[in-house]
Image (cartoon, rainbow, N blue to C red; front, side, top):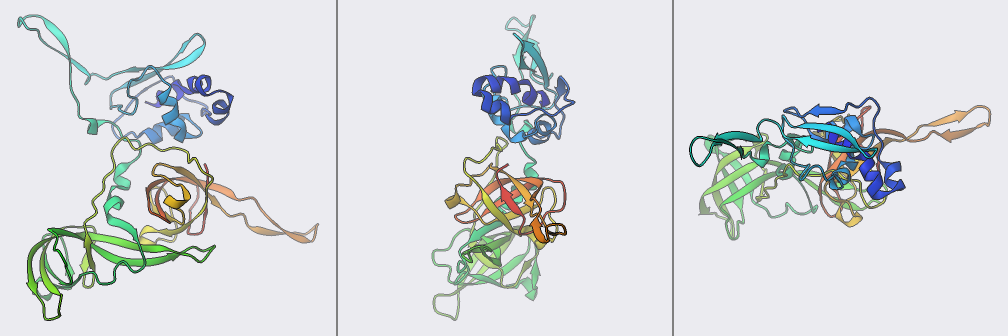
Length: 356
């Protein structure tokens, strides 16, 4: 599929004109044919052929050789050919696409389509790197945890609980739900430039099912017996119960350049690591209200240092240095979660985020 990108680059220039030609640039040393391998992602393959791999959706949209280029499977072959002097992409499906089966008379063999699940197609990005965050991490209002039920004990007075255990929660359940998500209050984020309170991280811990609800001594309170369905970390006392928010991401998730001017910052990182690398998840101080959308690819810059000019006798700030790329995969009103796709040097909180 690597050829996908390459194959249609010139076609994109024809369709979109000189501006697209200036934007879409091929990496040197590309090959003219590629067989898709298990474990490939569209992003990695595109990166081998395009300087700016997030332009591959536009390239494929103007490519008449591939009916649905977003569904590419291991074993498929991609070829770069030239028609009237212009490069085009030709796709040859792998051996899984067709097979011979007996005809209606039971004698002749005729080609038949062999169906294959869409889930077998190679993904646009490494989905396993972010799937957990789609249900595990949320940004909520700073006071969202006030008045929510909380864990008071595990069975046999255990203070740490895991999948398959029983736990007890106390609080005002209102109209009880059949299941709940368990969340741990995280840090409250403040915009480092304006001082505005942006939101609070709700760190997902797991999911529980309601088994029994009994009245409590406090008016309006109940004690709930819960079965732990799954966990992403150990459940602790005082973890909070909130309505389940299950989200998933499909294989047709497409990176793209943002349509707005972005001038943002990394304000947090999951798990609180100090140095951020490839496939880490970071938190940005921009979200829906700023025009960010899931799939937007952004560039990360290290701020240039200030040095002393000994000849002029003053100080000069060196240019900001581009250090990596990220892709937004979930947005909230004032904040976003993004996956680091490339890091040419360690990244950190307060690094600059701009258009790619």
